Length: 373
Image (tube, rainbow, N blue to C red; front, side, top):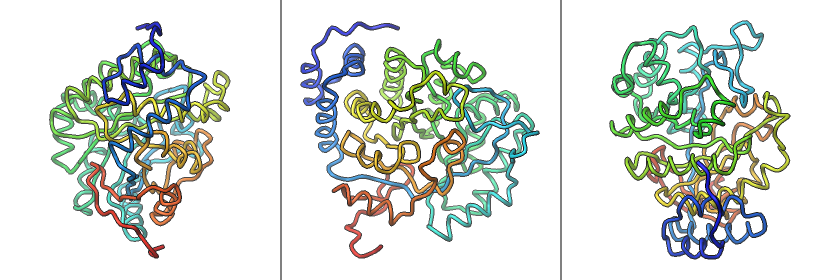
């Protein structure tokens, strides 16, 4: 799909300020604007203030990356290992429970986010039993687990429909699904960066199936690799259309591409990504008018940049994480853990009001946090 920019920036921003829906041609104009990014950011900040006041939410959670063994060959990934790699790993259930206990005892996590490589040796029972064992041991914990790629693989391996796989996972204790594996949904570029992954059509079907069953998901985009602006328009338009139909996305998360240890590194100018990401966050706020929550990514862009993004239309700081192996494996060097106290103080330092939330964006408490940390 290709668009030609025929619209003046000022008229697009006037529409945005009045909360009139921006169309796809106007989205392309925003993406291609090179001189007035500060105006786009200013309007996004104004709109975010109207939608979310001065609050910035965060979640106390722990990532569980259960294996780095993967049979796929995605060009943007530095995480994948073969089972013969010296640093390959697969966590058993006891180790996973130990990590969760550590998160509970040390920081009082409300959520675990469970993702991993597509390990060809794992049978469906590994996934099903993982959810059951975690829920049996931590009944009050929100389990955010298994991307559409993993749902797709489970469906193939178990000979069950997407609906049946998701229903079984929910019955065992799954609460929500990360909307990763989307990368870029424009099919030509998708086929160049992850040809072995599920197709755009399959990703959409799995997401819509989850939403139809009452299972919420996040929505994501991999940003700053070889995608074109029309590719981004296609991706965001599709995401917005799904949200119109289902209202099943909890938030939108931009995943800035970390190139350093990936096979795409020579095709990407990594120095320009952070400069572009602030305007991109702002554009998301203006275009995704059916999303209340836009999340920044401090492990990928750094704490300082994440704080700056809070004035670019972003209203969520993400989580404590405790570990984040996928970004680190691609060459990210901004760390894997921030304590709740650190996050609170950072948000307050940005002159925002910190609000602890759960995975589904229910506020747990909102305080001034005076003298707590």
